[in-house]
Length: 86
Image 1: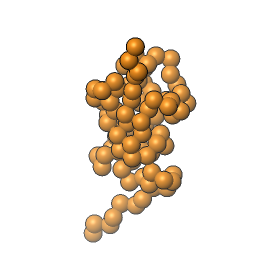
Image 2 (image 1 turned 180 degrees about the vertical axis):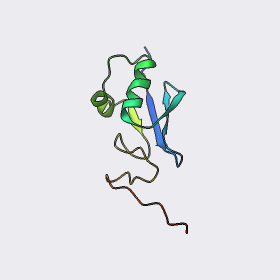
Image 3 (image 1 turned 120 degrees about the horizontal axis):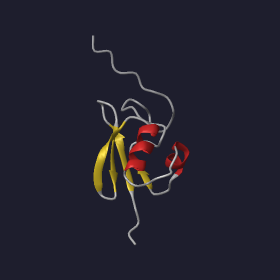
Image 4 (image 1 turned 135 degrees about the vertical axis):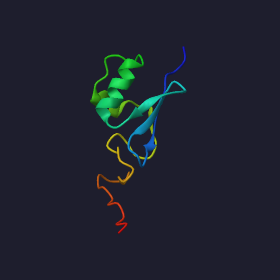
């Protein structure tokens, strides 16, 4: 039996994180709830948000389950301000 995998890529500047399940891109999500729904639809049934945040088979790139903005600092819960372009 093949081990299942999930990769959650870093947030983009446009918002959202690309998700690959079992070696295939399955969508872009903008939060933990959306990721949970996406995984349930992809056959990972019965998961809730706490399960998804703690699953060891999920590879989080560019920050963990608390980071959903490209402006977020992956080492803290703080958010960087966008540069003033005036």
